[in-house]
Length: 335
Image (cartoon, rainbow, N blue to C red):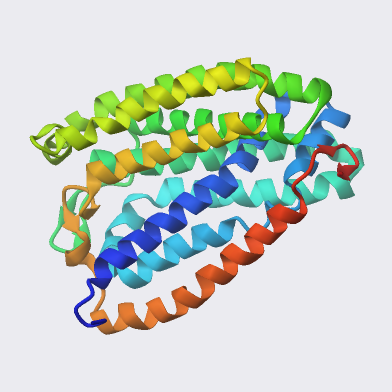
């Protein structure tokens, strides 16, 4: 039975799950960094930082799993995509380093807290923007000859990749704002609620704009979205985005605390599903399918044994940490 199982599809879903888990768990703390200048120095910034302090440190586990899984399960795709995206990937890693260092040092070096706050914001913006640019560059197409990247050093840079980068910055900022609505009280919560309204509008417009442009980038994208009878299913995605958008603003207007964050995550999930519709079954869109890029069946099976043990463990300790730190937070910590 295991020999007849298409492990290539299994690994495609494992990597997709790891990437989405990273978006969910690291998106809102990147968003808080992006929004940091909008908060007053002192209590508001301390409270915002405390809201993610217990959970932010392990989020890159999912990024490592996604990147490492791509290298191990789809080595050809890794060999093509990495040189195509060297610049945004390196920029993302540097941004994450700056953010991590600033997170720790703003508490330990209060004399230079303004500098570390700036580094926290800069690192968060650079990391989010780079992730979006890398996604946009992948979607717009990567030049491939034989089994190697055939493009130039700056092929990743285009109006579309910048658009996707800005859209992801808006989306992460929305997650950060709605996280603070859920976790804080008082003036900071009110400020976060106001930001959530503006960022909700910006994010939904960005989703609409990226969605409108994407089908024209590649003939296969258009087919997967609009060919009959598949259009009867794919049309449900923008419909659900519209429904989620209405529910999002209604929950904010009614004073909801948890619902705006959960609905914002729902918007990310729908966008992720839309991305899957556009590129599946390719791993290098329009160029290399998951089966063409896959490692041998024996290698995939060996890795799957390890992943089937490690992923539940990671999920368990992550869920436990969120359960322990599930209350409201202020400048002194969780209560």
